[in-house]
Image 1 (cartoon, one colour):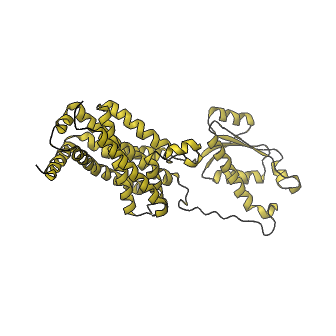
Image 2 (cartoon, rainbow, N blue to C red; image 1 turned 30 degrees about the horizontal axis):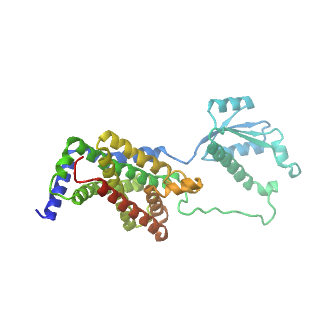
Image 3 (spheres, rainbow, N blue to C red; image 1 turned 45 degrees about the vertical axis):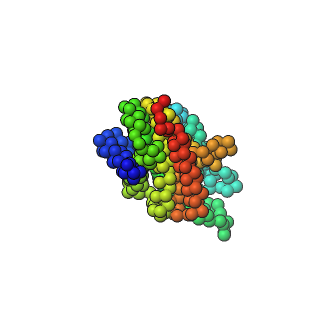
Length: 374
């Protein structure tokens, strides 16, 4: 039997096995959809409608306008309180994230430049320091917006003062979904691709199917190529489906080209699928293979890929570790393609890193998967 005929027989066997085994189709198509929907809608860095209590010790026209400015902010949910004790009670109960206190002499001193600054205090719940800083920024922004509208009347700016115009590139609406969802695709496909081959092939070891294949005239390279090829088609279809979901369901713009997307997806999926084969060969048990697949894909892809946490903000030694996480390069590629476009200066180094990772994974799999039984 020629090599081509053996390959055709192996591919036919893998296709029939996939069609008869719904678990492969569920992992390839249902799992990415569920993970993208749950994480895409559930994870958000946009802190909106943060509840803040406001205590006005001496109501006046200016304080009423400030209250209206705070209430008009889409990021704040203003709750009036009549005393500091009431505001503190709401903070302790977790009903509000902070309390803004406009002191008794606030309005009077605001109208008299000689007595500036007008006293105000923001008390924030800092159990989550990042949320406390975000709340402070929202309150300051609302107050500065109100002050800018009253600058001439209150003589806050001299003639010819500075006016700062904001312009945000690549994500003008500052939507966290536009940043998170492309990275989430890399995270989902990292886990899905590895699980797909790790579980299915581990099951073949348990059932003795792999022993039969190892005893056949087929070469080890042909076995690996047949398995990788069939599951690659499944995974690529799932990958393109995830990209379509990002565009149609989450409204993330796609500004890049299909060629770099297909190239990056192909290299990463070859790595993930080969890693799954490597794990299944070591474990030869579905439970152990699943645990190993989650350990080596889920946590690194979530914590060290730059999907959620800025790599530049990590300690130097941990930044060095991230270079060994292939998901880091796919996250960078997808975020570039979705938000910036086809920027080859950023894409080529990441594509090269993925090519190295894929080659190492395939080489390790060929080395470990021997054509003999223990």
